[in-house]
Amino acid sequence: MMYDVNSVREDFPILARQIYGKPLVYLDNGATTQKPRCVVEAMVDEYYNVNANVHRGVHFLSQQATDLHEASRETVRRFINARSVNEIVFTRGTTESINLLAFSFGELMVKEGDEIVVSAMEHHSNIVPWQMMCARKGAVLKVIPMTDEGELQLDEYVKLLNAKTRLVCCTHVSNVLGTVNPVKELIRVAHAHGVPVLIDGAQSTPHFAVDMQDLDCDFFAFSGHKLYGPTGIGVLYGKEEWLDRLPPYQGGGEMIKNVSFDLTTYNELPYKFEAGTPDYIASHALAKAIDYLTGLGMDNVFRHEQDLTRYAMERMQDEVEGMRIFGPAEHHDAVISFLVRDIHHLDMGTLLDRLGIAVRTGHHCAEPLMHRLGIEGTVRASFGLYNTRQEVDALVEGIKRVAQMF
Ligand code: PMP
Image 1: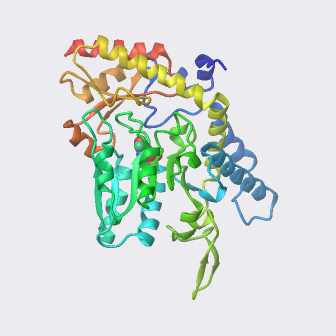
Image 2: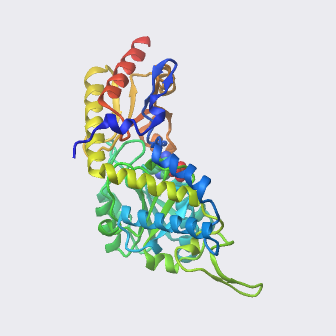
């Protein structure tokens, strides 16, 4: 199938906006993506025509809302090729998914002196929940180091695994460097040591197909809003045998089977981990976003974004004097972090904004990675399925213009 980016763009009303009188060039997709009409319309339609609280309702609307919510769980299952819908827990997003796991896994599995392995390029949301859990349990955080090029050092990783290691937590794709980590290999090695693995899929799921059964990870977290879906919804995937054993994270309605003041029993999977009214509007809209993506074809999306990334990296490197791009040359996803000479990232970002070009600047919630690179921050351009080569041209010309001002 031919990928027609111009017709794709028509599905996203916001892309027609002008910023300071210039066409919007939205290159902040790593932070959040824009929403296609079908996603927003699904939310409006459900609020207007279906809205009722899900589960336990005998009335028509409640059952219809429940059906939509549970059909969405099946859509997510298919999207990541999980074995069962029991393995799909709806959360508020990647951050909540990881906090859920850090609490529940910590309660069951971690004791004083145990070790949790994370990588040098994690987002704060895959560091801080583990630090908090380690502090509670007297456990220790170990870090997989990385090369100057931004690739994990697998030889050092293997040395970190020992009888005290309880869990390995690693991002699939770095939100700063764009590095696509060899997670399948990381998982294989961890399993050989009897250690389960959590993969942070916040930056992989929007860009290429993921397959839980092929990866064989034990846990996987991602966010709806980075996937062209709404804010406030995300997923924690967990192998059923793990989720069965882990204790609940939050208590309340939905997650119980029976409650008495003497004894409360918990609901079956996945409801055991879904206390309170779920965001059933958002789950339905997330399923619409997934349908939209799979309709375009994840392979087409991947090829299109890889083309943009290669084209941008080449032009930036060749044409901008003093350009420093972070991250590896190979296995590089649709995120480009850069600095030009000694121009401050905030100045670059602010001036690009004046040209209608939206990029992100700063530490990108990865301060330990910034320390490792010996910098305070970068400018980050991140691509989505609706970006074009013309927008890359605008970015490169914009960077050149800003560079001339300094
Ligand atoms: N992990 C990575 C790699 C991310 O890029 C992000 C978002 N920037 C998160 C986790 C957190 O996602 P959320 O804010 O949607 O919970």
